Length: 362
Image (tube, rainbow, N blue to C red):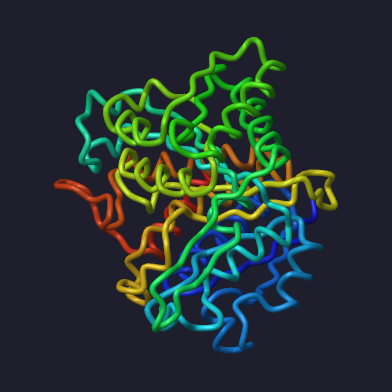
């Protein structure tokens, strides 16, 4: 297979972790007889510095004709002025909107080798394997807003949703649940928010088409508690944008570190292989405090590349090979600093990537 992958390395540790993912994808191509080309484009703070905008037109056009997009991370203190006309995060929201990426899939699986890396009790973590599906193009991040400005005393964000936005992401989550344990949890705040009451009503309507699913509706504050108290009870969780953003960061602590969780953003735009054009990224940020030190954990980005192969290229065996290689390295007791504990060998970003490549070759 030939595939064109746009790489948006971004800021902070983004270039470091995407470099390791490219290394793994190149190894996969060699092992399985594929040809992957990588097209590097600017987005985020680095794009502001070089092009004067967080999302250059050339980047958008390159992504639209790609088969998949691999993203590192964006942002950092350098661009944190809240009154700046452009910020790195605007580029991220913009590319999601430009590619109509309405669903973010964030799998949370606790590797048995990493149970000690989590602050949660071992018995609570046993059997945790869930998928959070977060709506990406609606809600408070995209609704009408007012900035206060330097001298202002009023600001607002609007959590706006339409039936179509809710329907399509709930249907995608339901389809995912049908291929798993057939359990779906919808998260809202329907006791308070009008948008959540619409969310629940539309969700109930959509799920009439899925009689085999076991469904429950959970308020977001209760869900925050249940994720820590009994996470193994959940299979697929679907939520609106803001709630999903917060809950998945919380869920990363089940796996021991944000450095372990991949994600895929999917929509209804098809690539040259008649599969969804997706954007794949780790859930962590740009971590400017450790950028350039070679100590970041590349495994979330490497696992994101496995999701890229699975969802945008249809290469299941190749995706599974990456995931198995990561398991092999973890079974050998090798860790980056964020998931290390007594008795493990601590390595840097590049060495971890090299070890995954070597495990792939076996």
